[in-house]
Amino acid sequence: MYILSDTEEILVIIVGLSLVIGLLIKSYRDYKSMTNEYNIKMRKKENDEKYVKNLIKEINAKNELLKKTAELIKKNKSNQ
Image: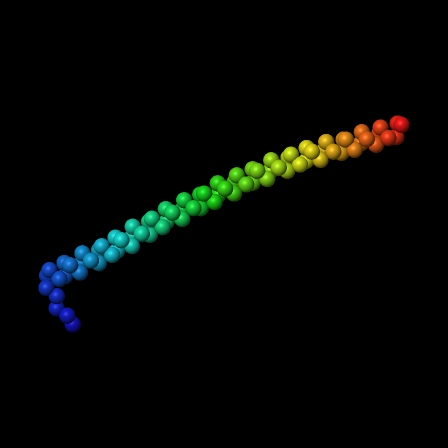
């Protein structure tokens, strides 16, 4: 077994603590970036859903107009 002097033990402790602190900081930064990416994806998904709902409403409205137009054309043809 190795026998370390007091200064060597202090250096080992400092290096060990700096490694642990570095890992904690990196983990925290990764967590923040992943959370930010998730929030961006969720906002994009919500915006996409709103866009699709608006498109469906517009398509339904135009479909109703087309149906009414077709009915009017049939009535005009049958009246002539």
